Image (cartoon, rainbow, N blue to C red; front, side, top):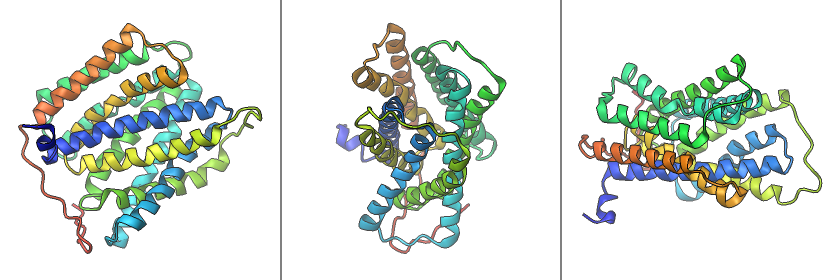
Length: 312
């Protein structure tokens, strides 16, 4: 079977979308770091992600899609966007209180949390392959970010775990609420909900003045939103084709691509441990891909102009 033939299968397309989503999220992460290095306030960089994504996605949705999304579904999608905003805010709060590696580790508890919630709420069968893939990916992330050191506070750890929990809840909600809704239009409504949340919260956060001598910050700020828009739409397309747990595991390629981009853009040298961690994450993705081949095909999606949206 050729690569083109394999990608015609819904499961293979779902995995490909999740991996591509992780790659684009890494572009957003590195761009955010460059924007912060330019002296932009954390609140502005955090808010630029959903704001930029919302603008681009609404433009794309207007041009490419004329599907009707019922009012109740719009409200549910915007409500889901609250968890996107909460995850971003909690992650930044965690980084401000504890070390960045520890905050990253706590955030990447989300694949395990998605699996746990899927088993208890959605009655999904976890299986040994998915459990092994989760453990292997977590081990790989530990090798990439390194052993946590420096400040450790209860508030910071709670913020980090809260970010992972919000991301897990978002993934489960979007897999149900956005069913049969075109990914670009659904993600546009979700990001609009995140923007509304940020509009309420941003005035309460601390601000700093950017460095006047720093140049190019606008480009990095735009990249934060543009790459995040593609990443969120691709991830939604993924959970419409595979289970939330499978999509979450495949999306853990983000730390690998972030490390590679950081080496290229930020001049950070890769260590042998980071390379080994990347190989472990890729192994987890291969395991979940092989396991997904034996799963039943998902129900076909209906992206018709006047499709009725069915919310379980």
